[in-house]
Image (cartoon, rainbow, N blue to C red; front, side, top):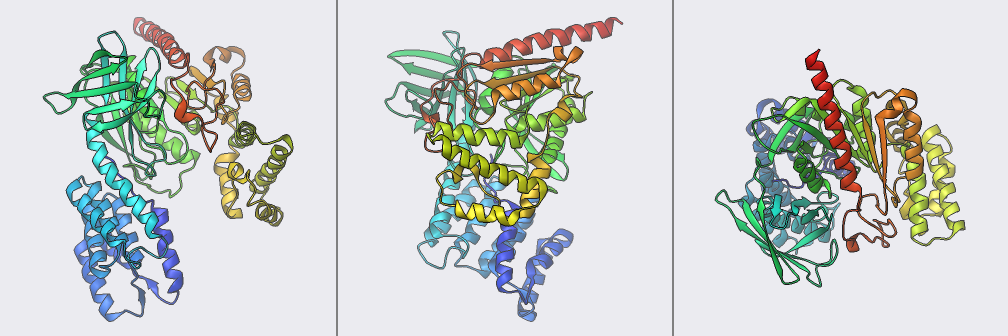
Length: 586
């Protein structure tokens, strides 16, 4: 079961802001954290209480101090110590709803859902008072966050017992998976995807075992489909029935091992994921899925059904939570960049190669969007460990080039005129020039301030500081994929959506082909899927964000997406089998 944890960055920021108001005093959190790590929570609490009596003017004893210590311990998987510190914070600040919320999060982290719900409900009941929310948060914000966590606590245990692959009596394969976009900001949903049609629907709950879906991805009405789950002896759903157009189809869960929760360590972080496999007792070709940008986890929308599809095709699949989100800790990096994420992907490959369910000579990487860059970097570092590479919706041009394209494409889809788009493009040029060179910050800051109310600023964004801009360029925006891909000697498949507004399809395909020339040209296959958007859903406009998004109204994955993946993997498996046979015969 996975639950939201605030990032350590946010917690430390709260401490910094509180400490600024008490600049003359030292942060007690530093003292308590050191003792908790070395001697345990009991000694840390004893020292805190002692210093609170004897050195009240020397240290900052404000609520955020203990809260940050608790979250750091939680990040380091020292959950008992974290709970003890959070309980101390409540004893010291009994009127704080935020302290209750933090304790609830710690209980949820160890699977004590009863205690977590109790503390969340107590926090909610306290928020009617003006002094209950911390100074840096509004009561409304905290209420909304707590309600989301209560809903996650309720939904995940139910959903996880229903997820998996089912085979219908009419031959259809049906995937039931969890989707949670932008981790922690919206409750998870349950998705149905079927093959060969590619139809995909969000399932809306009628009861814990009965759901309905409407005519498109997110619409609940008019109801066109009802799904009822029947439990098996092990508590997991064994059957489902689909009722549509007065016809009922029965689907039986496909016999395969349950999805296994796994953990591996990478650069100081503890990365948690899910391992799916077609069957036990033998080794299968295997794939590591690498997520895109943002608050991505193993339940990034599309990843659950992709994993199920690959399992259906005979592959063992590992998908994992990005460091700092889901169940993965932040480790040594509070904000992971491409190289950090690539190290995690490379570690995931090594972990998968060590598993009995995977053939170590046939483990590949599949990266989506930002993950396509990440997977390419990881593959270039381990040419003898990665057997193949799949780039989905990206990976061919630099992030800065892709961002320039995205701004133009999304603004055109939104109906901006040519002059306004040109104005936004000039702003992007200046924004990236500042990041690349570290100069002209004053001119950029004046320009950004003057345009802060412009309707196109939401598409372009703005730098907060010159320091962050320079780091962003050095660690992400200035990355040139050709430098890594031109040295790769493994088979590569790139799947691009014709109507992708986030990735420049033609430029990406051209850049990829330029990286594979001469004898290496045979290593690359590029498939451009007609009418597919960035998420590979069949689309009219390609818009998946902002007010013009057509995402809720889409109905299926674009024809050609799964087919391209199946055909290429089939050819690769045949080729890999032949090479293995040749090696054995020699």
